[in-house]
Length: 324
Image (tube, rainbow, N blue to C red):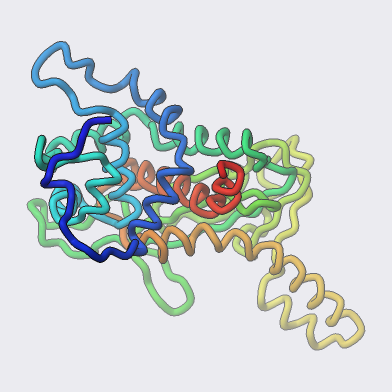
């Protein structure tokens, strides 16, 4: 470890660990850095021509900072100069070197997107969790959430993102994309992520969210009929799909049977509740409320990375106990 320069050593007498420092300390301890860097290495520049490349782990740390704090490439560069906690997490000493510029950060992000490494990192994180006792069980819970995209046409072409679409939910119209996820029914950890335009029906994607070893599947009313689709042929999973609200209200008028149906629907809802936890982490903990890029490919790659990080976030307490 290199000795720190005076620029990285503060002269403050008093210091209290901030929430950001505690968060970064926990994530630093639970992320499997070596295995993730090994996945990126075959696609990373060798440095035989041009400037020597920045270390893979350092760029990966910056890329993860972008996901955790919802930062663009220029924001990430600025925050590395502004935040001591982020510089310490990445390992930058401004007394010796400058922070990577926004162009370098952008090129690394494109490397992740173009080589499909978001999907690979999600699988690697889940493998890491399996080794530490988080096993994928025989049940899957699936759901989807809408993610808004900018509807403005103030750009060079004067048009909205052609890969995004609008859909109606309730009485409101939404423009953007959908994040479809399949989570383990026991642990609540995400094992499959699919990104589509907002107007794609949930039921058409349902069977693609299964890992293949399920014995039972829980889903909301939007997946009615998924078990009867051609792609479900050969599957032995039992589907427990929520009843449509209109049918549920109709049965409530029948006292003898209505209470049993209501009890069964509440039980199914209590199981499905686990699928909402990853959405909460991504949207509230990481602040991901709108898509940042144009096109489904870039945004889906970001979603896969964010759900991989959400798995680590939800499992961090157990991982830290095992490490300690």
